[in-house]
Length: 98
Image 1 (cartoon, rainbow, N blue to C red):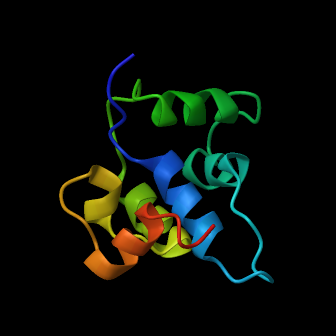
Image 2: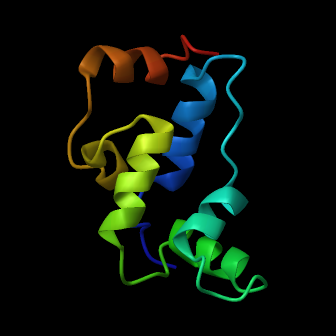
């Protein structure tokens, strides 16, 4: 298993900890339906598992855009390039949102 191209688990965790109480959680299944809408319903969870686990070799820019939009992280966070807003990230990493 390779290193995941996108930090999907971390983005979902960030969203869960920073969202408003009335806002619904985002599930990986929901993302799979958006990302792999053209695939058979039974293969979507497998495709999502491969993406999360780093076994997918191609990342569609639309996936990045959608994931950033719904989780409120930036692309730098998703790719692990550099932190987003340092104060927000520090607050998240310290567990202040728990």
